[in-house]
Length: 496
Image (cartoon, rainbow, N blue to C red; front, side):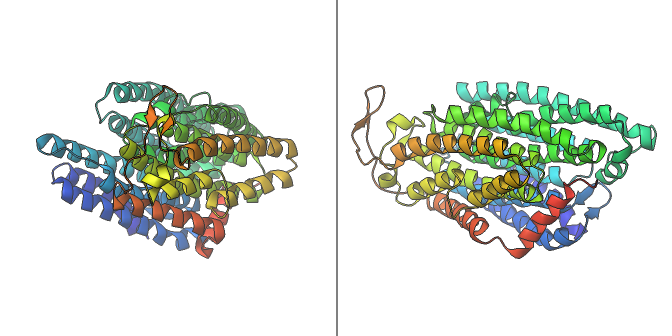
């Protein structure tokens, strides 16, 4: 099993370097193969991680049940996005297209490598470095189309994310200081070391570190009020990058917060860290639900849906019942599949209609016989409709809130999720299901349905994989996966 950790770290990086020099056709094949291989290796870790405390390799790499949950989510989206990108990219002929393709595939693989590395590195310092690498690479990918909007969104992303990661670095330093009271002035920030001594850390120092970590990594996670980069970046980035940003990067940032949560629970007890997450989660869910009612840009609509779901994750962690934590971890997996699928469908719509403005798109199902209905299904999945995985995960979170005697908070959660559902479903059904092909948009122009055909069969395959995963997660998650989620939830619990 240790060898698998090494391969997971090395393989995507090698492929990233190779695709910068190889022809685009070869790069496409290598990226799909690498994405599928990393997902397969992540699945291979599940039985061991679900029954053992940890898997290590050389002291710097470590996988436990919690990290494998996030690894599975990231690698699944890696593979699906690689397939989608093969059909989505419309590369120009000649040197310019070849140059763009090489930069895109190299950046895509490097971005996925950094997100695979984050759950596997052993320690808060290495985790911060991995998340910082995701910022640098993803910012370049956001701006890769070289439009004014993309450049502005990338610059805004870099400024806000760098500020947030500066705060996260301060949280890391303060947590290191807390550990010096137990381990002395020189020690490593490995998780095992920190968790073993957390019960003797100075409580006030840990409180400060945890709040700074939530604020700092919450910038990358998209928590309010440090979410403002997210709608612009997700809207302006190439759609494969948008899918990875929303389904994988936000989850990786949440993973970083959970590592601090583990330490804080052992040092302070569960009440304080849960209340901090509750405040950020409620603010995020409230703002996202309201913004979803007023969006007209298809990709911005999905971006605000991501803020909504990050709020749900934070609220779910504020509930003390173990079943709520299981629901949160299942939600990470289901959201990755659902949001990736939704962005794939949005990319197909944008390519077909040549616009992201939903007032100018009508008859989407008529124009896209496969990806159109699957986009509607993905939106229903994001809205927590059965039989998809998000229905199951949110049901577990709500059940955990009720069993934890947080009836008021649970009721607020259900109400805000319902508001978000109306925003998502209303505009999507207007775009995809309205049969009038001559409907007028808000600026008076006609919204005419293009000819009935798919943009690419690659897109259809990628979306089908996402929907199959969502149905499996919603109807009957495999027994080893359920065991993994329960084990990871126990790792996040309080030993007191």
